[in-house]
Length: 409
Image (cartoon, rainbow, N blue to C red; front, side, top):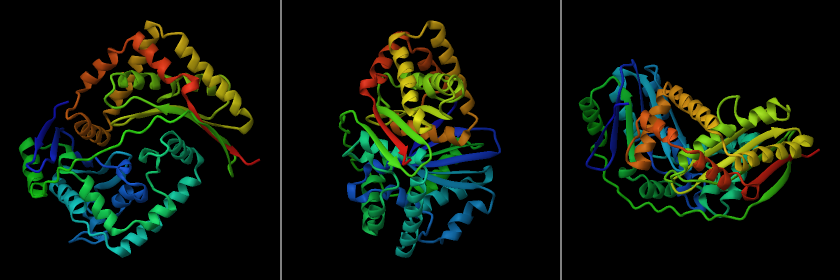
């Protein structure tokens, strides 16, 4: 896919991806998330993401929300462990309107005290909502076990106590330390020339003061393997297995992405779904996941089932992991796995907002963007020997921590 990158004098990068569609998509991604908070600031990055929609130096909440919605556009945002992202989808004529709004909410929000108190209440409700969803809450608790004592283990939403104590000073200090202009990418895909995007980008972001801070992220320790069982007021048992995994920069990242997709990734034909759900009818939901981060990663297997079926499900899962370890994939099996994964990635290109966000993240993480064919080449290059080595490192039962939520009765 064709793309261009233009760097403003303050370090902000403009990513231009031309397209012939009538709908454009844009995002602004900041290389800052919940892992960049101190322990007492837990939930702060997410809190800021909420508050930027509340008031700026020239707009009220209603004016912010209506600026794009009034022309049929969509505006949203999210926070992860390592990123803050604001994104929008809109008709082509509204590029300037969109980028101007991005500038206003990111760099000119005022964070009024009354809005802070209202939004704290909203986030406390959000925390309560997640606690009512054990299939969501167990992931947060598992990460807290796996990364105990490190900011990666803390809930992105924060805790009830930490959210209540967040202050305007916390907000301004966090933004000053983490919203570094050389770690910001504004990406646009639409029917525009590069010169149009550069001119518009310079108009709205060229005057942003340069802030090239030296962000320091601490490497998480590798904690001991943990097997924890908790009782909860729930009707079904939920279990997560997993461990720390390869980072974004590890040479085996692509291989683990492929192995994860084969084991429990998208679709109904994954190994775990076929063996645990389809063959034995034990778990309605069973899946695996791999999330590479800048200096580590997270590999997980999740399932939910009846309490009395949990041990059998675990036994069957460990049996499948042992097979992958001890019986290497044949060349035919590996090629099938590659074809499936490549096809899924190709279909994912249809999600153009997801694509532009992914490209912007790649620019932050690697300072470059691989074309689709380059991605496919990396997948095709994964060898049987590499898959075997990854299986031995990642799927060994003795290296996997486990957390289970059991019903009270």
